[in-house]
Length: 421
Image 1 (cartoon, one colour):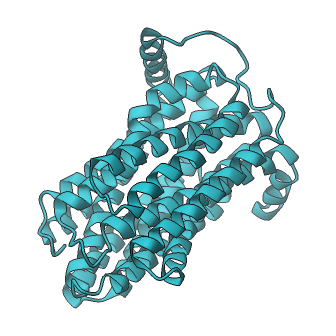
Image 2 (tube, one colour):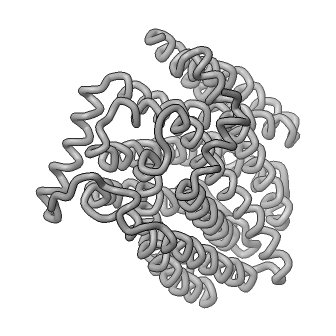
């Protein structure tokens, strides 16, 4: 069956379309939220970004996924996942009001950080629930297509949300007031996602078995169970590792691009141009992710999941290294766009393949816990890459040693995974 036929078949499943809609609308809201916070903290004329502020901003955006992840996975194997999608979306819509209040008051300190951490912590339940729900609405060979379509399209909509947030902020007059308007749009997106989830049957998304595990000891046991499952299923375990390494490189490249655009390509008094260029780099990565998602189902069936992942990762090593070198030393945006496109393609291709391997190798009773662990690992890896660059590279972003190291790590990841063809 062709990729287009598979796509039509999976979209013909009514409940998949509903789960899919919850994801894309919710992740559109995620992109809007990130745009509002990035423009407020990193791209404001009143606030010159430093390595520490960049690392802190990205840590706030991604660490909640790791802090809440262990709890999300365990409880998703106990609670009705449809109820999680409903209540979590409505809860984060309400919490965005608090975030907007701090932004309106121009408070960029600890209170804002804590409120954002809470919003993104709730988001962890939504994304983990969506990943664990897919096998309940799509079965058989269409699962790989669903794994390619749903998370990848969600990533693209998050990027589109970021771009839309930049546009909305500009139309609203820019500045902190514009960021508040973007947060209002974020609230609306989360509320719509919750309303869509209400159209699903209460028991439609599982879990299959009900057990009670609502203590700290139960959470720890659940986390351990997920880890043990990955050890017992080495195919799934290796698939997780290759994605983790790629996310470290993505985090590093993200900070390098931001520092280059904000502090080298543009004057400190021109944050709007830097923001537009960073949005273009993000869009290039999203386009690469789309290409990876479109090609992975067909190519992985023809070549196998591991060989295709090796090819996808290997192409990124030279393109990313050359792209950041040329971009930095020529002060040219085009090479950075190529590097982002290449890395976005590699990361999404491996993620789609790895998601499918995990779902095939791990029993459904443990999927919530395993996907939670998976998400913890990739988000921690992203923060590790961000922190490593932010605290070792100059604020100009011109760091030739880092450029070479990133390329070597990507190439080494491909060579290691190639051993398991």
